[in-house]
Length: 106
Figure (spheres, rainbow, N blue to C red):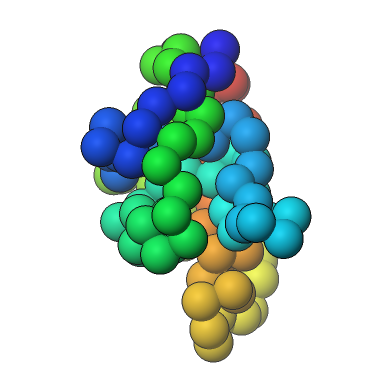
């Protein structure tokens, strides 16, 4: 379930339920992205004061450090690739997040 919150309620780890766009309609942060501190800077830079997050904690990924490390290791064994920039790091993070979602459902 979506909930509209203000930038003052920003917390790292919240998940967007709608994309955040700038005044020109360009997507700044995509839907389903788990927010990190650098996203807050983007929002503040563009003057975005409200956005929609997932308020249902059951839909959030349970972050178990051992499980995350295990999945990262398995992923790195299958995909011989080191991200070189922010965009590639974001792709890697999204891939790992999808693997975690699948693991949590099993």
